[in-house]
Amino acid sequence: MRHALLPLLLLLAACQPQDPDGAAAPPPADAPPALEPVPTVSDFSRPMTARGTEPFWAVRIDGTKAVLLRPDHPEKAFEAPGAQISPGRAVYEMTAQDGTTMRVTLFVSTCSDGMSDLTYPMTAEVELAGEALRGCAAPTDDLPREGG
Image (tube, rainbow, N blue to C red; front, side):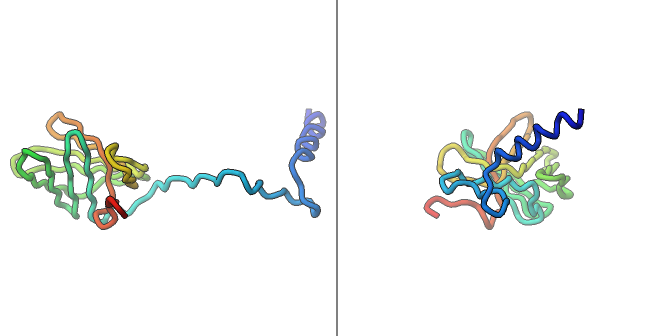
């Protein structure tokens, strides 16, 4: 069986473009650029901001404290002991002073807010009192801004 595969492998190798010294030829100049892999790690120790549209909302996380902002709702403060971090993801389990709980999950995954051309490095999911909010996130200092 091994001897039957050898001619096939040699035939396939001969089909590859070669330059004069026998090395594989580089890809053609008009070839599309190779896509870079999306990173699966992030520095979740930095202050983060997650935000979404329809309905509009934002969560700002800084250390063990977070603030939920929504139109027509009072600002709500939460505390969390920290995040559960795994490759490409951070999960924050938070509690407000009145006992309300909120879970914020940040995924390292390119995200668009759907209303602008802004691109964020993370996707965000927020669970709050049976409500699910979806949006995008980034380190607060690196939030994408319109016009630059």
